[in-house]
Image 1 (cartoon, helix red, strand yellow):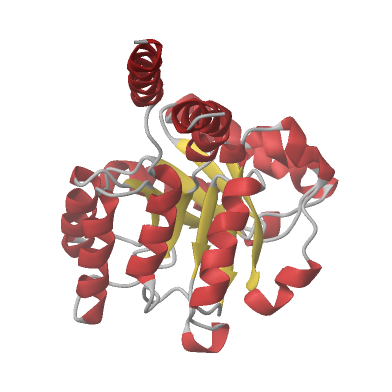
Image 2: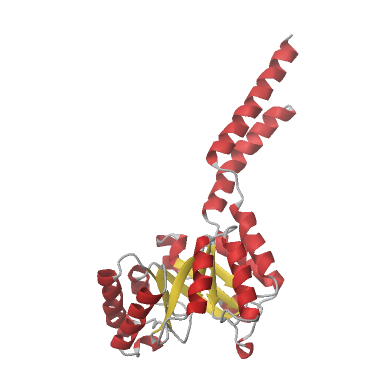
Length: 282
């Protein structure tokens, strides 16, 4: 087989897989629990600069939740981040279904009143059937009052499947990188799209980050984030040293030609092949 037909065959066989990889490119899910001053403002600037390059969802946590009053410093950085293309979730603790629902609802109402959030991040979510009624009440409250807000739960481990339809997304891994080898995704993941699942990896080096970004893209995870900080160093109080490399890793997965570009490439190769055949015939 001559070179041009080989190229056409190669592109035709490769294109579907590459397009599928691009569709599965995960978003970066960043617990941005760093106050916007000193080093914190620098990290917010890095976060904002990356928001125009890849899909980033930042979780804000002004004061163990929305706090008792609007914070203008947070308002400014959130506005810039969203203008750059970022998505913002408000952190709400649920204490494994033990926190008073009225207090949780007050947190939700304050976020909605003070900040231009796109959704809510319910932390410390329970995982068993005993907690389902609590979270059904909570999600119903949001759907009835703030229907535009998305809902993400963070049990940090694998819950029973009944939790998955309650939320738009569920973080099923929040642990140090050393525990990755013992993590087994649940079989029910195959029933849902990648956007239903997220991973937060703590205390991972750059090599772990690169591996987990690739893992997320190929194992039905719509959200991924790897940090180099440990629990004893306040794991979410800053971006990792390799933040820009993590952005580039996600960007590399996302940077696949659009279908129209593939079609133009195939048409161009076909034209070249046709010209080559005419020349050989003459």
